[in-house]
Length: 239
Image (cartoon, rainbow, N blue to C red):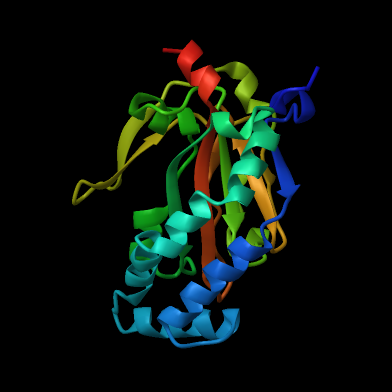
């Protein structure tokens, strides 16, 4: 009998190495082409220099990628489906991939962007259960496009925080003056760990694992592919 994700990862999260080379390469190539550069360093410098001039280029690049055919192909690719099935312990035909997303996070001194993108402590269930196509047994896969250390703003998680079940969440505005950037937040876990990754690795958490955004204290841009995965049979059972 196959062990479930939580039986294999009792803390409620893991760092996984999988066949993501083509996905990483496709993502990097698209992003670099958007600003006519050839390396992570050039890409970061271009976006940061533009943002210093109050340019919306970083947001435009992120939107262009997320709305591209390349992004759609990534999220429906055989490698993503097979990796998801291996995590969920289900057949590939039963994998449901929902709410694909791409984040582009500038260094923390860009205060406006920090307020807009920062996510305080929460569980994925606090956002997405009401939207459908997921359950408390669903998983979140976050794949940084480049190496991601604590100083780059790697994901912060609460060990075993899922064992307390679904937490109470309340809605807040990150920009309280202008009532913008609404978030749902829950209490912080007792302890936390930072999920640093190398290129080609993914951070995987459960829908009940408490987590928050890391803070990008470095001089580069953090780019992350995200998607939520479920077993179709689990969704049918929880209707």
